[in-house]
Image 1 (cartoon, helix red, strand yellow):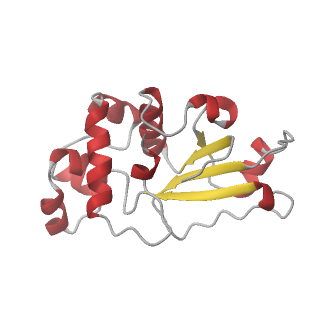
Image 2: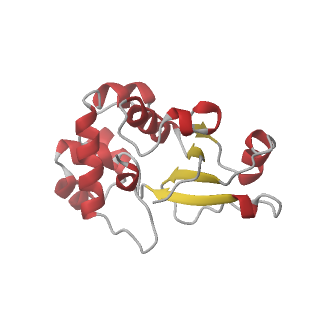
Length: 172
């Protein structure tokens, strides 16, 4: 994946943001905080809000927008003046980012049999409270190699569609 000089990493939720920050803090991604707009992982779902908050700074070079989200259907349509200057890359974590916890626990087969949503499985079957919270994820994945291994395994068993990116594609 080729990234522009400027990168905006936009996360759908708190869990995604916590995981991206953990990976950045441990230098496990193909970009650093120094490469990011405003030097941080952003939370912003609407293209219009992103434009208003971050694109009115007069960038002279292209910007890559990395959207970390679980939905393949969520649109991010930039207005005409910005569209040619922005490359939007969707990094899909479908069905949910909590799949990383399931993989770390080695419970993928049990999860598949359960027919539950990943967050529900983590709460009910694995008995983890606050699985979507930044504090839980930071503590749970304190050994960053465990999250890297979970990300790699997640991609291996996932149905990655043509032209689609996963968190594994962002790993160093």
